[in-house]
Image (cartoon, rainbow, N blue to C red; front, side, top):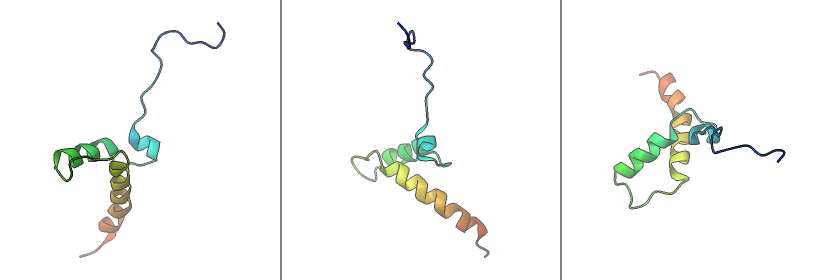
Amino acid sequence: MAGKTGGRGGKKSVSRSSKAGLQFPVGRVARYLKKGKYAERVGAGAPVYLAAVLEYLSPMVELEEY
């Protein structure tokens, strides 16, 4: 058949960070949220949002002079 690819191979995994357009690791933030027992359940959007906030705030902390 035309246009059909054989087998399961060839599909490359895409990280949640790259899907969200972030540099901070969304998977690691999710893992820390789950292991930290901050809540019984952690939604799918929570680590993405938190990673985006951390990425936004990190240059401000870096440029701050003490």
